[in-house]
Image 1: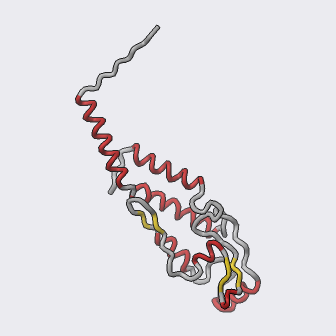
Image 2: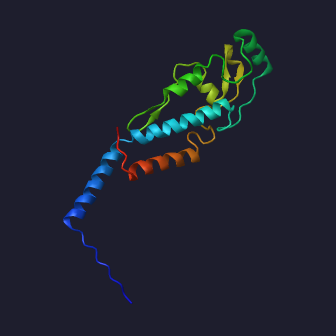
Image 3: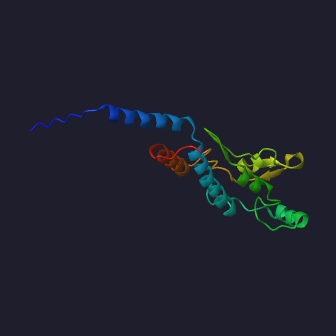
Length: 167
């Protein structure tokens, strides 16, 4: 038995479809809302990683005994990693800004930002080796992890498919 279904689109249905498509086109022009939601999510990931000593992006090596002793003598702080004056993490937590098409975490200008992320030699005559202690993203993934990209995808899908509008 053959079933034929005829779909008639009248002017009202065409108008409704056109309005929905126009709205979708407007939404795609700026992704500030979903990127702001993702920024908030990702800052929570950075915090979890930071306070968990690399729990999200790869466990951090402990401080060397020599540096830990210096740190305690000089700054009077314990052996917590990446916490001499807390400038790095305070700036990171407060810097995420979402625009129409990207999120920027501004950490430039702080000493040792790159070296803490990827590791390397630093200090006087570059004699001190600092192991990588990724705090912004996974060095292995060279950016967002698969699960972070999945969260971003779901946030954008929700934004595009629902009646949320840009503010």
